[in-house]
Length: 222
Image (cartoon, rainbow, N blue to C red; front, top):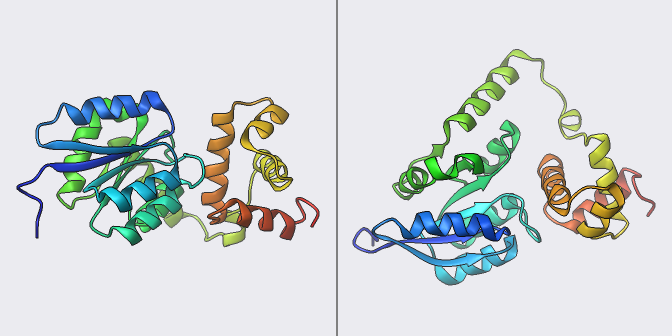
């Protein structure tokens, strides 16, 4: 069965109300599109995808509870026909590759939201891949760079920076995002961004795995 004769069902998941509002405005302006729900964190996005069975999920990468990578995996497992479109501020070629491997159909930078989102939703709903021009360029540069450099070990590729080690240490001590932000003098959103990057870089999917990583690598005592 196809849904060609029905409205395109869209779920929006982002923890920032301003971004959700912008996305909802663009979605509602399109004839034949239906906003079926919105989610404020990764776990909520997975639950609503299972419940509402959308055609397209527009998903932020740095939401609390479940990062976009793990949320994508769970949504694709639960609803294989749903297309996941990532909406993010980040343009790392490693992150894009991991998300594509997890089953993401499209990747749009928040800076390109107004100009590219409608085109991206149309593309992924038709079974196509969609990367904004800037993201395509980043992926190509990463591919060319990887081809011209000697292969590095997985350990070297996944080594956290000094700032990331600080954040791993604080999270490993049981501190929440707000406490980490206060300790380091940065915003909660910056902590969330670092946390998502750390999880992607190290291939971790939960805070428990992050704590185990911190203990294994003697960042925090057991």
